[in-house]
Length: 266
View 1: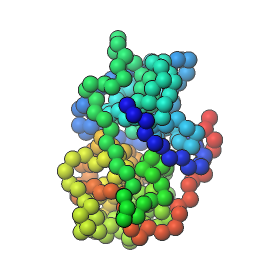
View 2 (view 1 turned 45 degrees about the vertical axis):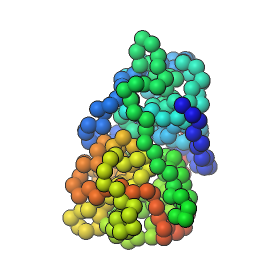
View 3 (view 1 turned 30 degrees about the vertical axis):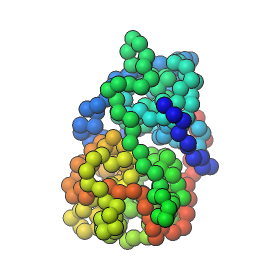
View 4 (view 1 turned 90 degrees about the vertical axis):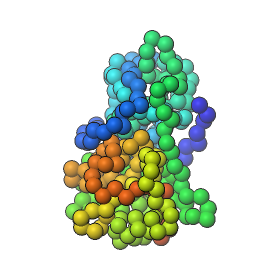
């Protein structure tokens, strides 16, 4: 795989256990099983994105010999591990990333798994559309840092959650319903296929305020109002009212959202 450019931003990181509820779906239909195998027998960190740099968050650490399910693969940071220096990363069914060089998948190690798709990605809107302060790597990292956070509930602030993940202090719309209407009216809303990683996923709801989530790729989403907190789900159909997905575009976004403080990585 080719090297992918990864943006950096200066934030502190934390180590947190994964405890959110995942909604079961067909997201694992095209997947492969693997086993963690690090060269020094130390636990393997599971990262929010395909990079092990200190500015990115660690979701959990998997002990030597732990089984994993690989949903897709993508190029990322070059890592030297059990199977040499590689830049292939595996997206797991817990929503995190591990370097493939430290994952065994059979008696003969293969870098590009034949039954596993390439991860789907999106980028910030191209000119003349307005770029976001954060890349989709940074947005996903910040969203994953807030897993299990309850500060975006009561009142529901789903739109603020995705806007702040992309670096905006204010989204520029009052509700997710209004924002979704804008995406539909201007031709940004798509209804077929799986929402690419980094895209915004839109819903109608009974109150008329709408709802929006951030796509992690392969059907996985992260956002507010998952059992009363920020959580992850594994299908766009985890709730009714699905409208479609769009690029992460905030034409009237304003201010710069502060990154939440986190203790150093342990």
